[in-house]
Length: 130
Image (cartoon, rainbow, N blue to C red; front, side):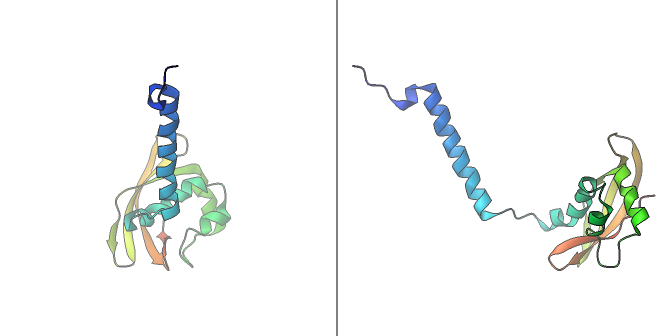
């Protein structure tokens, strides 16, 4: 009887590769996701596109007292938002934002929005659409 080793079996090699990949991924999950400060600054802008149909949820992305009235919040659903590189000064940052019609590549406006640190999070202070 001839002896075979697992590395001679292509399927065994795939299994071992998957086990190594899963083990490597789980280590990252346990350690947690630690975004850079710059990424934290633009997170509320990226979340706008995801929450566009929920004005009540959009209001939570704004700093206390900074959220527009609900009819204005509903307008955010029409657009997709793409943040540029923020320019920070202390607990406030200016972020260039490209506003596109949702579902298209048509640029509606390019604006500068302001985000502020509120506790450990960054929130929108001003987010003009037009």
